[in-house]
Image (cartoon, rainbow, N blue to C red; front, top):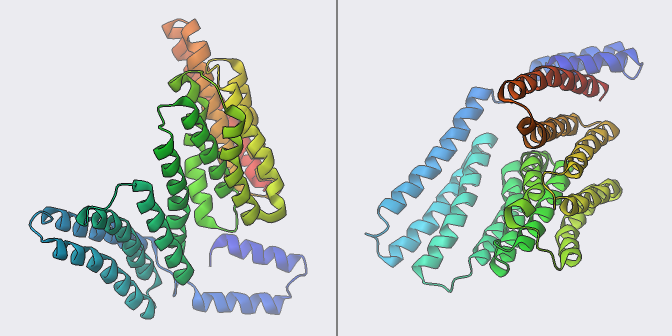
Length: 358
């Protein structure tokens, strides 16, 4: 049994929640079951890489012979890709090989997206590329409703906002600064929504990976596209409404804090007009500290980790943009070294102390 689980059991026993006989029976049961039904990391790695290579190999084979196939054979190969992967996943599931079933069903859902676009090419359908993402997302949602596994949920959670973003991009070219800022606001708040949906671990991973990049994109949006304004309030309301609705669906009453995060996103968009000004860095630091406090309040260590990482990145950006150019070459390198060593040590010490409290 994992040592952490053993410590929790001992703490329950010391608190009088479990008697010694009950604790010993739990330990005996877990020792008999321990490791028998779980895959070790080499098996998980082999299945993951095997699924990716199988999918890539099939798509490469089809693309290499695409020009030589008649339209009917092209469509048959597209359908066969989806059917064979899902049938293989169903067989693996019946054989109680759940990890292999997840990989094969995931390959089937990935092949569905390729099949939708290839079918549009085969039959020369009218071009509206966001509609293909919508159909792909619908297939992922159907697969998740039938399977309820984490990979299908990940597909659905990524493809649904991708479809909304694609419709927005198709209607408003991202070369327009307001269109990009609107998209960045919505995606940043959606990343926060996913990251705080603690009952859904795949969403937490997706949100955690997307949180810092979208924060950076929104903070630098005016520097990339200029400072032209117009329709700012209405665009922000549209951008933040859907992620807030998703937050209330996922977190119920706890989504009040997501509304506070929406206000932070809105203000971040407003203060980004001066990318080199201290107000932007101050507001990013406030957001990082708020995420750490949120993690302490709801006992979530991953929010503390991401919040501390965001705070460190904010300090580095401030140093490079506002401090380093005012110093000489040697002084700036010395300051950067001190910042990495002393600042990194202090932040890591604080992070460990906060995670220990959680």
